[in-house]
Image (cartoon, rainbow, N blue to C red; front, side, top):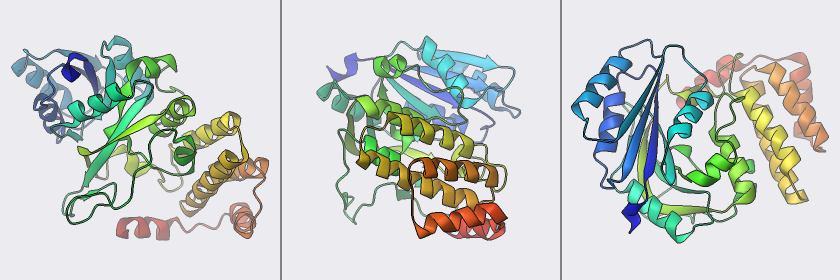
Amino acid sequence: MITSSLVSIICTVYNQENYVLEALNSVKSQDYKNFELIILENGSKDNSAKLIEKWVFENDILPIKVIYEDITLPYCQIFNKGLAISQGKYIMDLSGDDLILPGHLIKSVARLIDSPNSAFCFSDVELFEKGEKAKTFYKRDHYGELINQVKEGYIYKEIIKGNPVLSPSLIFDAEKLKAIGGYDESLEYEDFDVLVRLSRGFPAVFSDHIGVKKRIHIESFSSNQYQPKVSKMLPSTLKVCQKIFELNQDKEENQAIIYRVMYETKHSLWSANFEVANDFIKLAQKLGSKSLKFEFFKIWAKYRFNISGIYTVLKKKF
């Protein structure tokens, strides 16, 4: 039976007192009952820890493990603590401000059982923001059907070139995730790197359902990816791109990483993160990038034209 496989849901919480109870209740409401919930309270400065403690007490019939940290740890490090004590055949990484929708676990696990060589299953995600109309990550028509086919299988090239997978939906094969050492603790964020390393050696499967509601707000981790002048995430993106350079095996893959490096260079320059922009340019040179755009980026980086104010306004609008 599908539900005979244990799923470990690792929920990391940091300063999410306004959202964490919704996240935990979404786990409780799952129709897939064979799960364990591992809550990682990462040294929050707000009331998150007390809310978690009360919720755990009120739901003590559920299989729950909780780690309370006094000092906030980097995300990848705290997640790996949860991974180390997990016992599930499958792993889900749940943010303390997102919601799992009913059916997500049972549908994702079914796809992984049908494809035992796959490292992970991904699905569609609903993106919602206060005061804005919710939308799905993949474009759908008025009937809720996908407009474009979502590629699955070996998607390494697609992952390094762009963002074909939204990480909140991921259900990992635990054995394969643990075999690569979990998340890279030298990085500020996890999804790009872990998808690259897993997709290099394993296929992935897609399940055509909306599995997670991802909350978009100013405090969310992803909102700070291109933070003007002081992005903590861009240096990690650079490290992953450097890894990809070593992992690549053919010209098509090198073309894909050139495309990605140029994209990250553009956003580094727009956001006035000039130090990391220069490092992206050095990597692009090593990859053999040659274009008028690349020459323009080199001039921009050299003279450090700061238009991050315009960039911030445009990001808010679009």
